[in-house]
Length: 230
Image 1 (cartoon, rainbow, N blue to C red):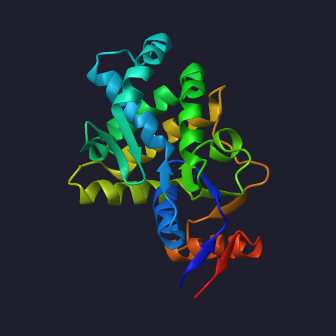
Image 2: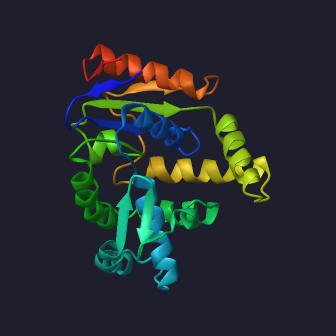
Image 3: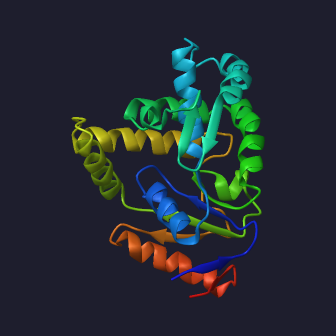
C-alpha cells in the first residue's frame, strides 16, 4: 500500500519518555516516506558535547556558548546525528545521555537557541517527536498526537531495550529515573511536557505498535492529509 502525502506535511508526536513515540515516529515515517526527526536526540547530542568539552550542565551560559560550535560540526539526518561524517547516534541512546539531555532541555535560553534549527529542518515535511513539538517547536503542525502509557509499562519497555544492549538495570531503577525525568520535564518553566490542546491523545499501554499506527493513519486520512494511491 502506498500513500500520497500533502507537500510539507508535518506530524508532531509528543509524550513522556518510554511512551513509544520514537518507535512510532520511525514506523509512521517509513509508512509515509517522510523523514523522522527526533528532537530529543538534539538535546542528547548537546549534553554529550558539553560532557566531552568539560562544560558544566548546571551552567546555562556555558552550554549556550557551546551551541554554535556543536551545531556547526554536526549533521542531523533522519537516521541520526553525525559528527565529522561518523554516526554518533548510538552514543546518545544510553541512560546517562538521557539524564544529561533532561538537564540541558530545562534551560530556557538553550531551548530558544535550538528552536530555529529544528524548525528549519522540519519545513519540507517530516515526522518529529519530542516533548514540546506540538506546543512549541511546531505549533502549526498539520497533525499532532500525544502518545502516553502507564509508568510501569514505560519502565518495562525501557528495561527490555536496555537488556538487549546488555545494560544491567532493574525495572525499579528505571521506574525511579522515569519518575524523576517526568517531574523535571513537566515542572520546567520553559516548554514543559504537556499535551497540545489540539493534539489527539493515544494511550499505548495495551496497544501493539501497529494498532497505534492504524489510529494515526485513520486520522491523517480522514483529514485528507494523506491519500491512498495503491
